Image (cartoon, rainbow, N blue to C red; front, side, top):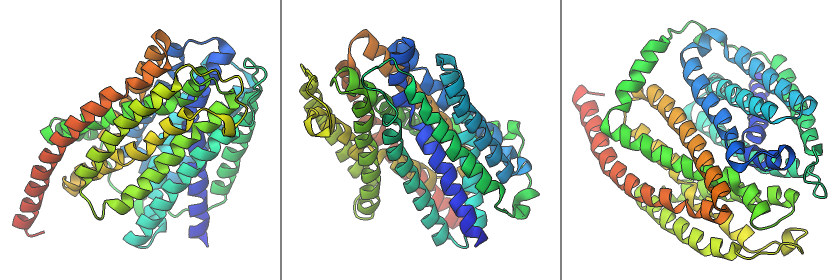
Length: 421
């Protein structure tokens, strides 16, 4: 019974952060409407979220067992609850930056603690993998519901209205509910409390030595470029729907959920297909189709009036077609992460995970900022046409990475066989 309470608590923790982390696209649109912030200035919100995730993830990797998983999660939930309440009491662009910095830092604590706690409440590898997949699926449910939750508080008749900030009372309430459930749930951390932990200097040294190996260097560039493309699209899709497709603000936010849904579907289908086809050829096919979808959907966004649009039924076809890119780009990130980890010895998985978090965060920040500047200097169509550049780069980078990864994997297998493991 205790294990089920812990699992429920972990799911609720993840649900809170799924909504908050993926609300950045919605909030980018709203701060432009409410505070007169330019597109390029609004794009900095991604940096406040991603860089705090990278920085805190790196810091807590060594010391989380000293802090305690439960204590770290309680602190994270309390911090985001306070940040949400501050958003309602002090409506300003600087409090929005503070919210995403707090959310990023708290998610780093939550993610490390949740992933570590799963090992304490599962009995074998099958149960561990099952619950991990369920947890990630529930995260996507939170992303989807977040779009509809935010849109329910938007005043379409008055774009400058700040009534949408009321949503943060709801989010603060969910965070506090998660905190109270966790507080009342006993977690036995005795098996990890006295484990030896590395110093920050040792962790940094491990990461730097790993980062300069050729296969890892190509991988981190590939991961950086992928997340640059993904976050550039995800963070600016609500603004694209509003400014280019002329949809009402609430509908712009709701229809961005198509991207989240198609991404979830893409990862599920990839999980089935990867048992039958090579990950390399699957990703090549996905990238080619993604490029074709950009060239098909964006011309359909030209010359749209939007005055007659009141709901999903009369939205322009471009609003439905372009977000389907998520179906095809979705398998890329999990596939390349799995490929690099499977080609490295187990002792290097920790430092590699750190590099994945850091370069993913940097890619997300860069993608959002670049898209915001192009959006402001030219228009939304040009900004999204820019996604063809990282798609082309990924075709080259994944090909190079695949060849290097195969050689590295063969070397690891040979080494393991030679050592008798």
